[in-house]
Length: 188
Image 1 (cartoon, rainbow, N blue to C red):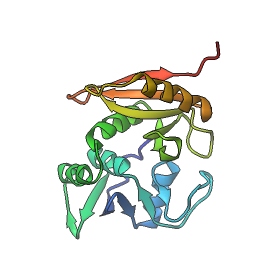
Image 2 (image 1 turned 135 degrees about the horizontal axis):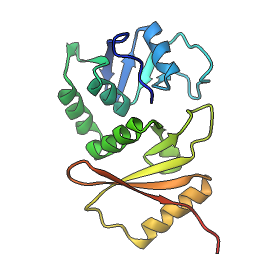
Image 3 (image 1 turned 30 degrees about the vertical axis):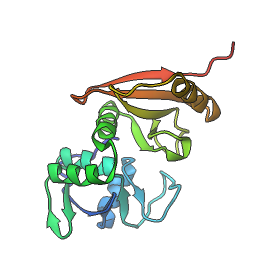
Image 4 (image 1 turned 120 degrees about the vertical axis):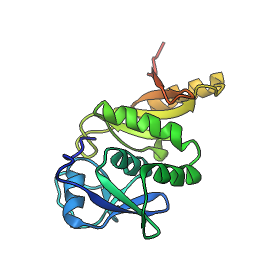
């Protein structure tokens, strides 16, 4: 996710459950051009189109933009800080902190992430952007103290083969440090 410059943006984002809503249409367009969020009600937005609609942000995008100082989150009519925003999402999403650590790490590295529930993973990862390419990676997040069974590893390999993507296991330790293992199905 390439973030627009901080001087140009200080966006109000209204928090509704798991989503952040950007009501300002001009700022929504600006964010969407940087592959942030999706126009409200558009399931597969064209990255080259201009949608004059509010933008919907994932919880991970919302917290990331908050930490970058680009947005002003509003929950129940009150402006909140990033710590309060994170606690809000942690109360709604199991393992939010670990998943967010992976989202922030990969975003910092220049990748674009989207939810990947339809692939049985946590994130789909793009190098160019959704609509410009198929995601080359799907990422599943696990805690460093999670015991994986052999069947879990085989499942990751089968996942990558069935969706023609490389499957990545992102392992997050208790300090939020992320390590990655990439799986690719190999025929013998």
